[in-house]
Amino acid sequence: MRDTTSRRVLEASPVRHPIRSAYICVDNTVYGIMATTQVQVRIPEELVEEIDHWIEEGRFSSRSEAVKTILTIYKERECTRKFYEMLSRESEEAKKHPESLIPLRDVA
Image (cartoon, rainbow, N blue to C red):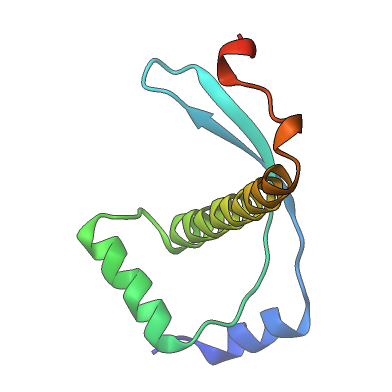
């Protein structure tokens, strides 16, 4: 069981700490630096248990890594959805005005 007293203190005082993070390659070269912010979220216990299970399986090293990865995947999915919508609009426009199309062999 988790300590609810410290949880209540944290909930009463929102914390935002900009932290510099560095990602290190195997050869000790830094390949990415980004500022991060600590946020507090409420997640249903069953999802926390699922994340903890993924950590035990070795899919993630921490809850933080799991949440960041899940958010990144969602962000990528949204970008793909927007790209698909743009392609659909452009396809409809091309059907209406086929004379405006440029043959691929002329693009290079």
